[in-house]
Image 1 (tube, helix red, strand yellow):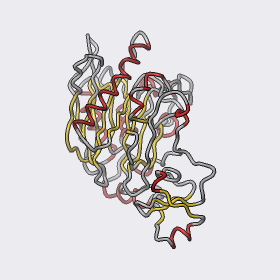
Image 2 (cartoon, one colour):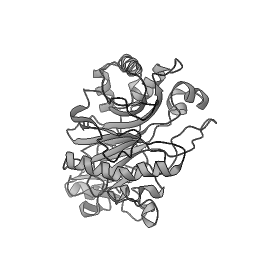
Image 3 (tube, one colour):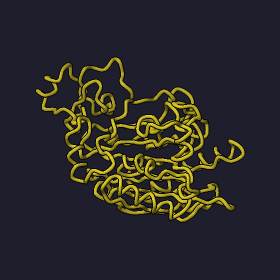
Image 4 (cartoon, one colour):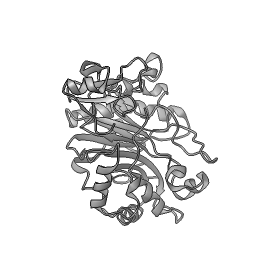
Length: 357
């Protein structure tokens, strides 16, 4: 699937009113769209090499960002100040306590714009009574720009000395999802973070029974050579079997696309991970994912364009139609699909074109 373009017109010093105007005037971007990201920001608060202006330029592209590897409160405060300076709007943060065993500990944080995102409930570190996780995940309930509530969890699984340790933690995310669904019944649960495992790993067989990785192609860890990426470790695991207002997702390859810097400089001064993101928009057709088993025939489950589909696909539930090339094309659930040979036919039937086409 081709992700939606970021709001590149935001720049670094625009005012809130200009942001709203830019979003309304830019094709493919609506006020209702909520940009949600996850980023291993790499040792935020340690040392003096971090380029906070560059970090804020990347983080400021989101309405809500789950951050891993926050090392100090001072580092987090510094980033918040820089975010407000570069974007011209207010930012807030929810942070966990320091988690981890031994001498190494880090915090999770959610950074968000209160003019676009509302914190509803939660901000809880998982009570891991089995003591599986080195760093217990952190979660909260948020309300998107168009009023939809959802749970966002942030996880940073251990890398460790062996892949078996990583797999144990990944498998334990199945129980964590159950815990979140019981705590917040009826809400979609998204588990984002740095999982230190590819989504195709067999460790995901149990968590995959109730979830699906949005990012399945490409890689998120920066290689030393410009343009090279090594591993697909970062992801957003969406709930399966549930209609979701997802209008786009992808990897934000920030060194070349945004900052115009080398990978060597990015790894030293920004992060050695690229953010992953999703776009939520209640006005577009919903998508429903199948369970992800990690290996076997369902590895090919995708939401990409199907060659046999007609020119126009409508959503009978929302009354919105999509043409080939739209972010929502082919993602309407089978039970809600209305098929048309032309836009004129869809309009005659009372459907309206999706705003992000």
